[in-house]
Amino acid sequence: MKAARLQVIGTVAGLIGVWAMTAGGCANEQQKRGQELYAHYCMHCHGESGRQNEGFNWSSMPDPKPKDLSNKSEMGTFKDEDIFNTISRDMKDTSPDGDKIGDDEFAVPTMPTFKYTLSEDEIWAIVGYVRTLHGMKLEFKVEERKKELAEGLKAAQDKFDQAKQAYEAAEKKASEEAEKKSAELKKDVEVDESAYAKEQAAMAQAKKELDAAQVALNNFSTRPGKGTSVPRPDLTMKPEQAAALAEVGKKLYSNKYGCNGCHSIGEEGGKVGPALDRAGFRLNGTWVYRWVKNPQAMKPETRMPALGLSDADAKAVTMYLNTLRAPKAEPPVEKTAS
Ligand code: HEC
Ligand code: HEC
Image (cartoon, rainbow, N blue to C red; front, side, top):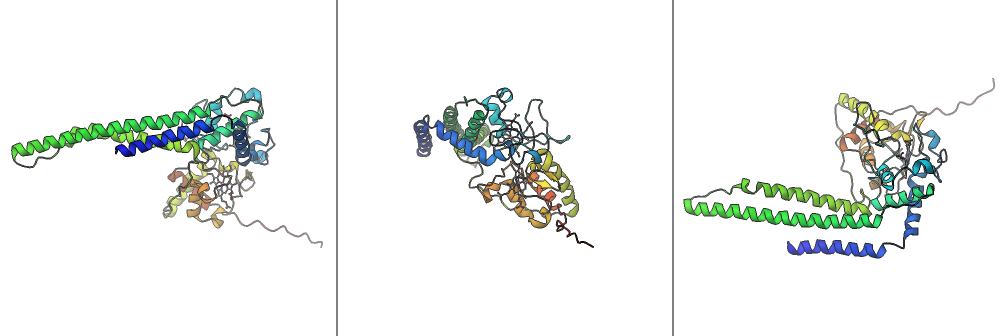
């Protein structure tokens, strides 16, 4: 165990070392990276320089239209962290019977989240670039945030090690007592598990925190969905159940995940992605489910972000898309002179 622990700390120290070396001096590189990511994930809605009606999708979107990111008097009221939290958030169901939403909470479904698509430092690079669109500079200390996460992991590791030691000691004491009693009474006495239940629970909690700290550090520089593949869903159900789920999915489609910001059904909706009028004919349910859960797993550079759909939400949205069966567009009728 000791060897394993030393190894973890060694890795953390190594990472801090690498960061210290790359810290500073690469501001231009970060800026360029931010610009490229913005061009790939934001520009279709917000435009090249952030102005309204500049992006090709702007006018097709339902209200509210994408915000003017070049407007300093408005954008200047946001802290770097506010912009970060908008881009990296969990989507909220804005239906009347949906999620509780605080007064000053940003919850516009058609502004997608990138929390499940991009790494944290990619999102900071984007925030830095967005700042330049209204003539400001990123002040948030990204390097310090990296160090904090690495230190957080080391602290979580120490806490877990201590909790594990306490658990092992308490368990050993309980078994020794049981053995002693067995010898005295000359019959088997069971170990009193309740004697170390508290230590066991504390260890489990510390393990959770350790895992979370590890994920937070990983997500700093690695895209969250990278290397994960979505298991095949079980979509078999009764027709009534499918119909009820499709109703839920229809609400989630516009009110929570803002799919309509990028896809059209009939005349309505954005045009970043393909029209979904005929999705029920064209697309297989299992494929749709796996695609909406993690598009990057199937096509790493797709512009469609992973929006953090739960399994239940992905199922409902899949059942909704399955109901979209518009007839094929008629070929234009030739006007014949008669
Ligand atoms: C599908 C279109 C779409 C895409 C893609 C998109 N946005 Fe937005 N964005 C919106 C809409 C809609 C709003 C909300 C406007 C409002 O509330 O008035 C918005 C608002 C914002 C805001 C203002 C938030 C606030 O608190 O008012 C920022 C900042 C922003 N977007 C940045 C970005 C960045 C950076 C990207 C790319 C990583 C991006 N957006 C991608 C549509 C989009
Ligand atoms: C920011 C824009 C954006 C948002 C938001 C978005 N999509 Fe997409 N979607 C795309 C793009 C772009 C593609 C094309 C994928 C590609 O080839 O890269 C796509 C592809 C798809 C496809 C495959 C369509 C086909 O004909 O092959 C489906 C299905 C789909 N999206 C469903 C959804 C659903 C459901 C949501 C909401 C949960 C959603 N999308 C949200 C941009 C978006």
